[in-house]
Amino acid sequence: MNGWIICIIVGSLSLTIGLVVGLSIRRYLASKKIRQQEAQIKQQLEQAEKKAREIILSAKDEALKLRNAAEQELERRRVALRREEERLQQRREKLDQQQERLEQREQSLNKRQSALDKLRNQLERMQQEQMAALERVAGLSREEAKQELLKLVEEEARQDMARVIRQVEAEAKEEADMRARKIITYAIQRMASEQVAELTVSTVSLTSDEMKGRIIGRGGRNIRAFEQAAGVDVVVDDTPEAITISCFDPVRREVARRAMERLIVDGRIHPARIEKVLADSRREVEKIIREEGERAAYEAGVPGLHPELLKLLGRLKFRTSYGQNQHAHAIETAKLAALIAEELGANVTVARMAGLLHDIGKAVDFETEGTHARIGAELCRRYGIPEEVVSCIESHHHETEQESIEAIIVEAADAISGARPGARRESLEMYIKRIHALEEIARSFKGVAESYALQAGREIRIIVKPEEIDDLATIKLSKDIAQKIEESLEYPGQIKVTVIREVRAEEVAK
Image (cartoon, one colour):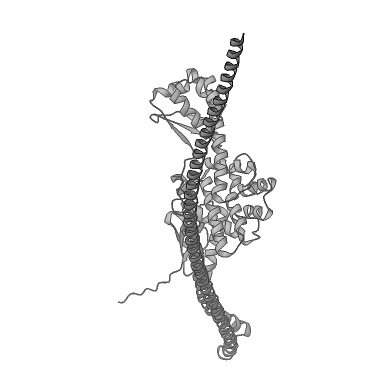
């Protein structure tokens, strides 16, 4: 009994000692692990601090580089601004000099006018003296002497007036041409213009002449279905491997051309397929119209236009005038108008917007009554364009009176874009008719001996009969012919009218 108790006591003691020893070992191991983790954390902290120092140093270097670059850019801009200020100062000085020269020329003209007045007074005195002499010597009546004297004085005065008028006009024209060339040169130098020419009918190439039969279809079924659905005329003639699509609406013509090309490539040509392809082509062309309208507004620098105006601008992509694409012409006119307005100190925003929209009426002029200028003005009023811009659009062909300098600038930019070499072209038949019409207009005036159209119809030279037309009348004749050409003909650009009067004296030595 005592032995069992002793065993139990010994076992309990052994268990207690084991527990104590186990807990001690466990605490030792735990403290060792904690020390290792602390060492690792300390090492990681040291590495993080090292990386942070490196990042800070790198950021300081980068900031220093950026600061140096910014200082260099600032200095470059300061130099550019100084140069621009110097250039503007030089231009102001040149303008002041030109103003002084104009004032001096005006003073000179006033002096000449005074001299002319004195000459006129002298002529009047001479007339009175001649009248008295004629009455005394020739025995003429006062009225007869007066008529004779007036005839002599009138002839001499007309010659003097013609000479003075030519001289003054030449000086004024020289000064105006010099300033106009300078302004236009500044504008054109700052804008690169491209040459665009497109046909008014669309030609579709065929893989072979056998395709013409498939386009026509049995009994003409396919071609009738295509023409009815597209609203165009399809011309299938003897032209090898080609057909022609004709329509007064350029958008419809473009839709029909794209659809016909797809049908030819696909090869399946029947009424149901034609309608589907035409619908796809319409959606494609409408997308192009939207994109081209937005591109025109972006390139011209005219933001905030109504979506309908943007669509009309896009439609001009498929509209031509004398072979010139009206979409490119509108952008070009807007840029030229803005540059000229900037040189003249006019409202650049108004000139730019009016230049872009001046021909927008051509997008719908085939379906609306009236001229494209009036149609475009009404469209712009409808979609909230400012009235000063609308006035420029409506008056750019002098259908209404021009009320601002911006209207004149838009007209000039329109003429520059349309009259530059390569911008426009016309058919041979129309060209020959215009040349004949020019010469016939000149010959219709009394006293004209011959007329010749030169420089592709951009100049008309008229030779007059010297015994019927004097020097003063030649000036009036040139203005009358120019006015009649403006009223009677339609033509691109400008036509120069030159009247030539030549007097020849001949004698034969025997």
